Image (cartoon, rainbow, N blue to C red; front, side):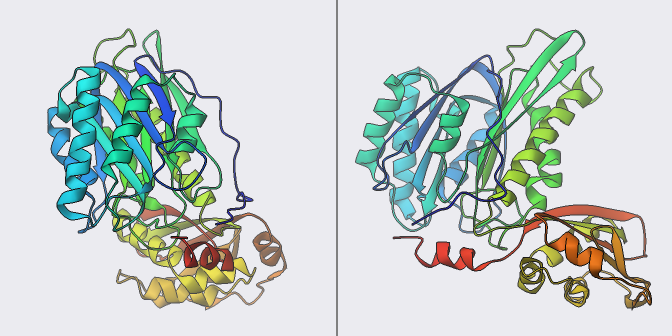
Length: 408
């Protein structure tokens, strides 16, 4: 499969080292490719963990076990396999994950429930246990790698490595955040990314970290879509090693809580945007902003109806300001809407206001806007104070080219 680098790609950032985090990547050989495809992250004892997972009813064993493990609140390791999702593989898939967990736990001297595993790739093929065993053994002995090498090792159809960083001040102490993500296709809300991981040296109690991640996810990863398909393996995990010198943050009222949350959400937002920028076949990054809805949730659902519409996405791909397709997508969303109060615009130019096209509408600046790589669609329903922004990409023939021979 020939994967050309996305024209919307961003260079990999210079991410800070996170105290208590050691990255390693090796080539296990899950597919016939000459690249690393297994990442092992070792975490210092006492690291807090939080997670959000796919809502798919056909989730992988990795997801099921991750949900079970979260209750104990701490993590010592993360293993990510690329090339095989190990989903829809029954007891054999579960046994493969249990083998990885036991092997890493023995190697690091920790409890098995402190080892989290993610896998991504082809669905319906059991993870080969002999390959996994050899890969984990090699990873336990491997030299540390960089953030970019770790990000590259977790990718599948990704055309560029994706990372984001941030920092926050807690009193006089600076805490650091670093995150990596993989994702390009099979991206839709309901916890919408393929695999994403955020690390910080901040001292945050597990319960509060979980609340922070859930809130950050709702406004970032769950507001992106590439193709409307939700993966069986979607996972975002956050790890706080507690190595920074500041009092533990246990509640939203504690000093530093707002700063930590802002940094976490910033990293999640940037990672989510990078997934959309690498959408399979994407040529345009599209922000859909909805205001005037009856609630924020209603605005989000309407935004996603627009962002998931093949007719809207292909119109943008062709540079066609067909606002009638946006009207269609609003109307089918199943949310409160009034045709006679609806307004639609592109690139800061209103095409229709209060249910009808503007008499003096000039499509020239809109057409010029649609020739660019950064597209904005604005919808105002005129019903209330609800608002939301979602992000997507255009739909081109490149998406078909990639997915028509995905298993080859």
